[in-house]
Amino acid sequence: MHAETQRKDTDLTKPEATNGDIGWHAGRFLVGRQEIGASDPGFAQAIRDAHESHQRPRCLCTPEGVEMYIARYGSDHIVKRMPDTGHCHASQCSSFEPPASWSGLAPLIGHAIREDPRTGETQLKVDFSLSQRAARQGNSDAHCDARESRAASSAGATRMSLGCLLQYLWDQAELTRWHAGFAGKRTWSTVRRMLLHAAESKQVRGQALLTHLFIPESFSVERREEIDARRLAHWNQLRRARRPRPLMLLIAELKDLMPGRFGYQAVVKHMPDQAWVLQEPLFRRLERRFQTELTLWSSSPELRQLMIGAFWVSEAGVPTLESLSLMPVTPEWLPVEDRQDLNLLHELLTARRSFIKSQRYRLPRTAPSASAILTDTGRSPIPLYIDRSTSQDQPSALGCTGTTLHGGSDGWCWRLSSGTMPTLPSANPCFRQT
Image (cartoon, rainbow, N blue to C red):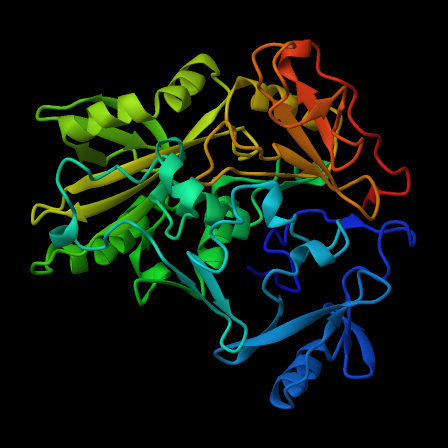
């Protein structure tokens, strides 16, 4: 888990702290005895020297500072967050990360996700194969859906499914973070760039994740030939490979699912001339296990449907999907769980709030998990929970009492059986966008 000194969304407006209630010196670091910012002249040399002398800088987003570490990538050096310290940073700091216990991330840390501060590499343990030989026919999408992993979550999940990997990359790319300055600036080109950046330094089954990742480029009529040439060059290594046939991972926006001449076809955005083959058994499992996601997508025209799938390329150059997982997102690319989740996001976006969208990973829907975390309320973020208990007479699964959790602390709660959504916690007036 990490955050770099500069946000990956470099073309987007960032919030600025205005007083000590919000942050101490957000965006600045103590390197040795020198206080310096990432945009200051000499910063690159300062962290290079600190890396050579084995010093660890401190992020000055809080009065006491938070220890960071420096990783080297080729000739570059990057200041990164120490593992499991994201919650120690101020909520508006780019290194801030909500406590893992507020989402479904906690069971994966230290097991499926292991970061080495010495190298900056993150090892990911997954429960799917990257070669066709090891794939088990009839069970190729068995690990894609968090709702089907109740046993794994209760015992402490130790591996990531396809769906978990997509959610993890979404978090790492900071696509779950939002403030009003991002409106209208997250194009597919930006999303793709951020995802590829997030996949750097990630290892899956001892191999670099980037070598197995395919994310379509933004389609352009003028650049169609050069885009197609890059794609074919990327796929040729798969097409010519002998068994065990290697698999690649597709991340794309799904446009349509339809019957083909043989089996079914998936059509994705930005690749209008290329259909993706999936056999009927996989399509039927997709309909069954992702009924909620498909129904939400069809009933909400504004939503996008993201997909991640493992695929191979035939000698004829046709891509065939071996497994598949889906994740609905808003037009702002924020993940959505269900209609109530969508209603809360709409309220947050309309009110121009700053927040982080939380994700369940492998947690079942009945397990407590924050829907979002407000980051514009001051130094302390506030988790927002949705209690889906079906009756007011039934004890709250989250311990909701009115609009708060049991004891009046630890977050805001909307109990659906009570009806109307309660008023959201107020934003700190000192927090502003620049």
